[in-house]
Image (tube, rainbow, N blue to C red):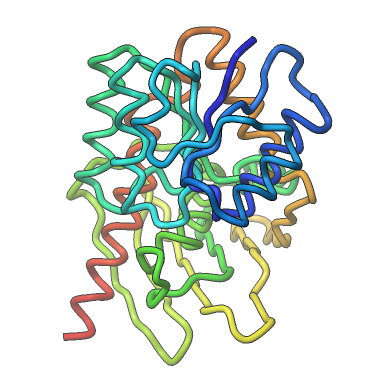
Amino acid sequence: MLRIGLIGTENSHITHFTRFLNVEERHPGVRATALVGGDSPRNRELAELGGIDLVVEEPQDLGDQVDAGIVSTRDGAKHLAHARPLLEAGRPVLVDKPLAASVEDAQELLAIAQRSGAVLVSCSALRFVPEIERFSPTAETGALRHLHVAGAGDPDSEYSGLFFYGIHHVEAALEILGNPVIEPGSVEVEATRTGDTVIARLQLAGVPVTLTFIAPGEGTKAPFHATAVLENAVIAHELTLSADYNAPALAEFLTAVEAGSPSRTPEELLSPVVVLAAIAAALEGTAR
């Protein structure tokens, strides 16, 4: 049995993973067996839901009691510290979006995984929504001329600002563009903020891209949406997340664990962080 430790249990995504693994048993031979964060009402709830007996305080306390880990901590700035003990021990880790909240942290995570040989997977659920495939250029539509992705994103979020929701915009855009590698320092961004709305304009793989982030309100949240302007067509779709939107990322992770190799290259994992860090830096510059 592959034993998985769950880190960042405050995140609702952990409920999904517990349901997939322990309640519905979608992946036979794989089970969530440990919770990190100590005794709390939330962990007691998850323990009851998933029949999980082991609860520890910190990720390093997992030791050899698990074979892999899922890090879902809401604040991406904590992902390096929370994933490090498992990665250094050579254990596979799924880091829920974002991989990290800085390029430096993301590079360190990738370096640790490379040194230890651990499988490291991270991805936004928007990469898997069915609408993404509809944006692929064809002979009839011609080449992509402009891409716009909009949705919720709050630069003032306590969870590292735009990184909490904004990584979805970036990863959806990169998926539509065919996952180009974006090198650190290569992105120039024009960012503006008006009230609750941030608009970032940049170029990715030679294509002009606009990303619109709208801060969630009281009981409101802008849906994710993409519009592609091509030579001979305009394609627009809401990017819909089903109730099981975390299932594809988990499946990708477990496939990578079984294969013993990551599903995405280090450059592909780093690129979304590079883009969003450039947007955050440009926005900070306009606020001075």
